[in-house]
Length: 387
Image (cartoon, rainbow, N blue to C red; front, side):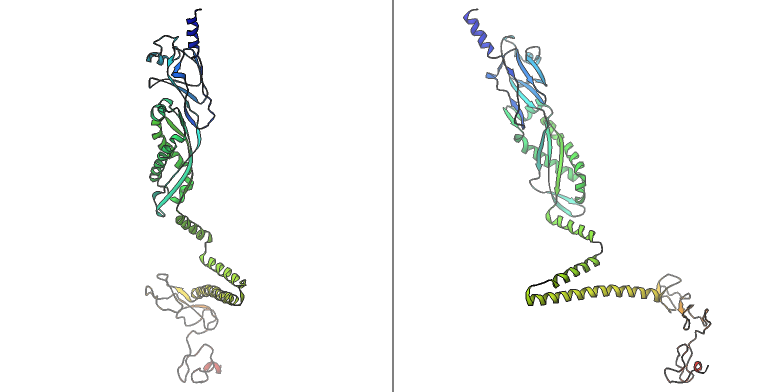
């Protein structure tokens, strides 16, 4: 072998290499393999690991895409390179090509959130402002499309390089999805999964043009303004209390206890006792009013009778209904002697036979109570006294 042959062999051997990429960053999406002068000799070994794709770019065009496996770079394995003229100098000559490794794994726990509140119309609270945040998972679905549309000629492309653009798209689709779904603010927490699914579908419609796919989308929290949350808390508190009157009585009892325990000196003690007595009086009035209302209700129930025509309650002894004017023929009145209920206008008791007509004084004609022995007006002795 001549000296020129040895020099030629040594020059060619420098291009024989193993092309592979070991990612230890965890957030790198694309990596351009550093090929010396971008020349790869025929017979070079290409190793593509799981969750990776190798993309050859020749003269600015995507020439071939290699999925996981081990390859020997030659004309048989790279027909597209052959077509583009990479082998026009023969198989013993190097090819000039860029090699990009694309990470196709899922990039998880990517964060998103609304930088500014989103204005929405709510059925319960009117116009409200919502803030939200969550996480999503992303992967490269089409490596060639990703290089064309996003990465370009970048030698090292990470999730941070596209994070802001993706967040803006997510917030836009999030606002649009909430407006279309028209979910009340009080029901948002129960619809996080449905909201996430709807937003994921909308986002993928945009991200597919970049060669990307959102595999998971999570809504962790949707918060309302503090004043709306306070209104919701008050509504929930009133619902938990139930009876407002009993709650007021409970509050009054607490105030009385606190006033009695006040140890702020003579003036403070006097003020505390005064407040305690005042609150105690209010409590007594509250209980008394409740008792009076109950007693009045019972009294009104025993002293009224229903109209036989319209059912309106009327005072006992009323001859005509105050609502419809019908005659209260079926009204009941008590017997003056035994107390049995009798029809209005009955002359004798159906139980004891006592007359129901009121006797009159024979001297002054004043009405006498049943069984009266003397007239309450003139003192004349009645017939009942002589019997």
